Length: 363
Ligand SMILES: *Cc1c(COP(=O)(O)O)cnc(C)c1O
Image (tube, rainbow, N blue to C red; front, side, top):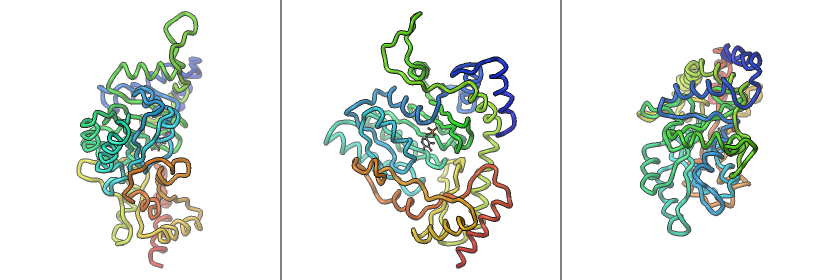
């Protein structure tokens, strides 16, 4: 926590706004809007997953539709496709940003139009905070007139040619889960330039109650709005977002400056115009055995590190769905490692991690 969260939470208690609406919810939405850019509207929700689900619902995704989804991601990017009864089609990554390959995206669109029908939406992800190639993806999406859902759950604070991630597509989503760069313990947001879509998202997120003195419903809603107590945490967190990005980027710089001279360790570099919040510092090693050697050496010293996300097309739950692959995400999963990356790591913590990695590399 940054320090002022408790003040906003106390305000919620003092004014008895213990509900999924109230001054902190409005205040948090305004803070986010100010941060992202004034032509964007924000709906604060109970999770990033809820935001993706609402985005698909707003786009009319339903049974029989196909949705193209980045394969190299966390399962929450893809699960809402299933909630809507639609079919996920997975797209592999390009090696430069580790995100959705524009080339494979276009191949997939052409294939689906030829063999079935035009996909209903594209879900692209700024994984680990690194922006995806938005100009290329948006150009393809526009050519075929398919809306893009921008999964910016891991990328609050990242920018793409000076534009904030979360605002690069038709609908953006952010997560404030406990593991993200800032948190409300659990929470999320939907971002859109269309105020009508924001209003519709809030309507659907609050049980789709029609305008009537009694409870009247003409559509199926959800209970997806953010709590006013948790929004208070979010308001405090917005005061430290820049510090958090700075701390995460410093972690990356430290690892890179001390390890990049080793020819076998690869870091994910920012292409020109790409700015990553460096939510997690990831490295790519030459092999699975090499990666496991590092991971287990860290574990022996009680330090947790983790393989990169397992691609969705390799997950038991999604393995039978169509996937357009090139081997990039599979190699990253086999050979890659997430290093300790918290915003609160001390120099001693970082040195301890580095010493073990250096020793292991030497042996
Ligand atoms: C965390 C995350 C989500 C889901 O956000 P929640 O707030 O945890 O529901 C979606 N996509 C990605 C890439 C994530 O990392």
